Image (cartoon, rainbow, N blue to C red; front, side, top):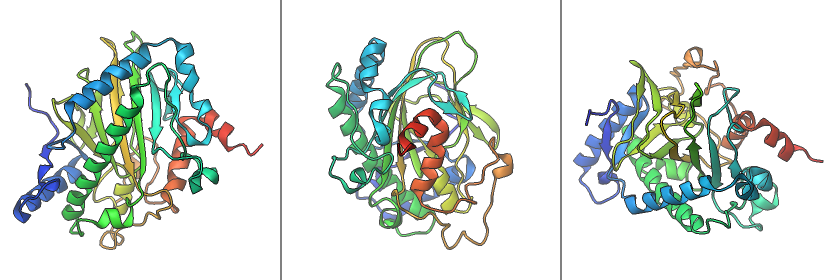
Length: 332
């Protein structure tokens, strides 16, 4: 197998009893990856491959079902919680329709939760397909494990920034915003991108993918492939970690080639700051912000933003599903 172009980091020292020297070596490796491209593979994460295999099989059952069945949990039924299924072409990236369909999930919240009662967008219950009932426990178990991995990884990122290991949990991820997606890229003869160039919005993304490939990353050396690596998750940084570090660590543009040979499945988990968290640069980074807006495809600056993470996220997702956003935002 050709060696991957992105670094492969074994994060097990963060998730078990390990020496300070082990954790320091890993922190230096994390810093190097975050400074270079903001993308790296993660192994030693403890996610059961059997759970991922089950998730893959159940997802394929869902996407193979008739459209009428999938429509029973269409996103319009999820309302302000922004959950459920969307069909091919409904999601936009940089204003262009993606060549994928997908399922949106988030933290499962009951109807009496204060934010659900208040009608806070992106909060509420998930929509589960009655024709694949086994999907619910598998998705929830996968999300719970990935949240543990993300919290663990953030202790290493904190160490790499000379912060206390629990810095992110204390300030941003005590009650994180968690979003999980299952994306299906049908094989197609059409030229185009499964997903166009973009960055992710929050702190970390952890990605499981099948063996089809297609993910590409914009590094200082140009665009490179990030093919699947057996037993590994792909991790990339989001806009809020870029903002917190004043651009010292970057949220890196990436994209997905359209699938021409066969269908592709991917499973991104977005681990983000608390909804009401104010995102401001770390004290050591505030005086020397490095803004790459001029090099971004959308010319947008993550450092010009003021407000909570919820404000930032809403502004972004409004561009992804503009019609749905308009429908759930209409007070009438």
